[in-house]
Length: 413
Image (cartoon, rainbow, N blue to C red; front, side):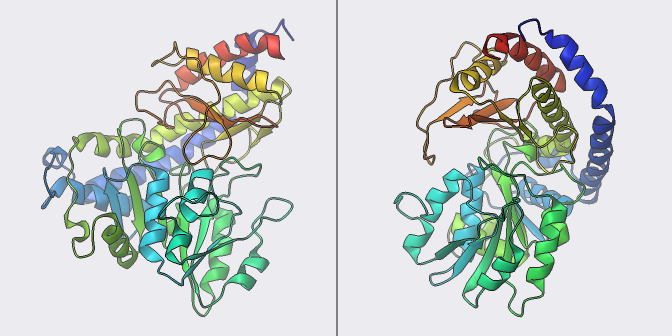
């Protein structure tokens, strides 16, 4: 294995993936047209790029940006705010804004991502968690094949079930991510109930990967982070929520205060970045998908289990690689950090992270701190030492990075 020529392996992988890349491009072209149309329909102009201060009353750029998001995602309304600091924050706003004491939320896709478990009160005793406010949380385990247990879900829905939540991406779980097609079948079943619960989707990592978004197949609410797909590496912070207008009104009251609604919330940072990031997102996701498939194909050639298969249809930008040993996991993370444009001199090590049960190792030499729309990788530091690679600002950077990683991994193969 030490005689591996990284460039040869990667060039061979690219040839094998030509048809896959072509399909990614077709989807990206479709989504780019969708976003372009939203910009045109909302008559975006340079006067929308200004900032606001104080309360943010009359922020024309902010309001127009939200209409662009709503139109592109097939929503009645959207909330796109710099005051939302992460995907977990956006998701928690949806839960706490819609659910009242005595209500129940069911997670239909198994355990949610680690940081959300803390917000829900499933793990730990963080003040202000959902269960502390009298909301019941139920988890529907996935079936043995990783699919959603629709029969059990429908059986568990009761009059007190106000919301059914879905996590589109796999998180740190050893399962496949759920496609729009997978979700639409379940949404259809829920919609036939006499008292249909609110259908909510954590859309993180999934925006613009497929031709449809969850709202277009029956979801009522979606949420995500602007330092993931929809920000395309341009946006310095923020989050979005989109969907039913009445639900958005409830949620914005939770974000700010009852009675203030969405009229407040200043755009303290130049809104051009937010518009430009969203416009660039379909193209950037195209680059991310190519990068993910290339990483998957190359590591599969090196003998490592991967998920999804490098030639499979995708519903998010994440590529899981099962490295098997802590030494390999650290070697890949440290190599990735060394080929990053920012803080390449740092040395990733496992560390305690807020909201995570196990120590986590992260490789992220990014322009935007923590941005997963840039080339990054992270992993819970536990067997089987699965690495989750996501994002890239440039496919060329991802390719260069992969060459470097493979060369430096030789001694650990």
